[in-house]
Amino acid sequence: MAAATAKKTADNKPAAKKKEDMFIWEGKDKKGEQRKGEITAASDVAVKAILRKQGITPSKVKKKPKPLFGGGGKAIEAADIALFARQMATMMTSGVPLLQSFDLVSQGHENPRFQRLVLALKADVEAGGTLADAMRKFPDYFDSLFCNLVDAGEQAGILESLLTKLAVYKEKSESIRKKIKGALSYPTTIMGVALIVSTILLVYVVPVFADMFSSFGGNLPAMTQFVVMLSNFMVANWLPVFSSLYAVMTFFKQLKKRSIKFQHALERLSLKLPMFGELLVKSAIARFTRTLATMFAAGTPLVEAMESVAGATGNIVFYEASMKIKEQVTTGVTLAESMRNSGVFPNMVVQMTQIGEESGNIDKMLNKVADYYEEEVDNLVESLSAMMEPMIMAFLGVVIGGLVLAMYMPIFKMGENI
Image (cartoon, rainbow, N blue to C red):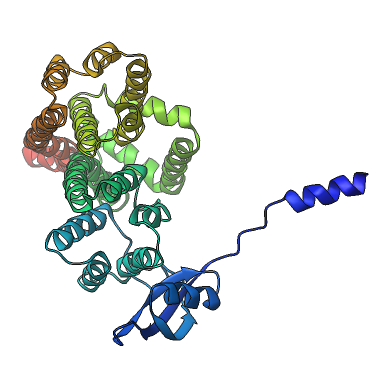
């Protein structure tokens, strides 16, 4: 009986799915015209069967020798995906067939890796799949929001319209990300340069002055004595100092990568930072409203949209607020009221959302809110840049200039005694 049970279990066990490979094919269609392309399938026999169903008589089918993203090429960035959406929307709006649009877009891009991605999408669509399903095979480049909107566009017959909205969404999101990254990296870069210059001065320049001062005799100014002591410490311990700094930075990165709690704590703290906290809050609101407006424009139900909206905000505080909004909306609370209850959205955002709900133009109102906060982010970045420039110059003057002044103070003192 046990053997029978085992046999039954084995019979019910689903067969393992055969690994699919990329195949290159050539053939002729019903009009006798030469065609070629790529298809993902389990075998060359499966490829030929797929082609015959499409009315193509295959003349050559062979496995693609290189993996999809092998063979060089730059990494595919978010800007490339935004450009892809924009180009596909433009082609389809102009009446170019979908499969031909893939060829034109891939040929117009210089990055071989991106070209292979586009051709892989074409191969799946050519094999009879949907564009959304093809994109879902590449989650590193097409997130759930992107795939869901493409799916909605295909089902409603408005794919080109939603691709245009996705292009706008990706372009604006990438623009905000770059501005924030630039605003945050500028002072960090300056601090790094100041650290390197100060180390060079302490290790190589100050010891020369120290040897010269020791031959003069007499007491050195307190500032000079401090710099000389710091120089002696750095010369004797520069390797342990930089090793410790590297170890701390590595530990911090690994802790941030491995500990979700630590990462969330940093995200919460970042919103409270002077100057930069306001920038991060406004950028999160811009992403929240822009994503939600895009989902509404595609006809996505609010409860389903909130999952994608939560992931697009980029901060745990707004993620948790979005999930709370989702729970409250499920129970019948209006979007505006649930946003007010979350405690993270300004009154203006809540009021605009309420007006949109009452007028039936919520996607337009949310887009206006997104435009406003994106402009606020631009203004904040400009203000921070203008504010930081004199502060950074003052910092460099104090650090670098202080070291140089400390070395010349004994020389000035000697000049006074002559």
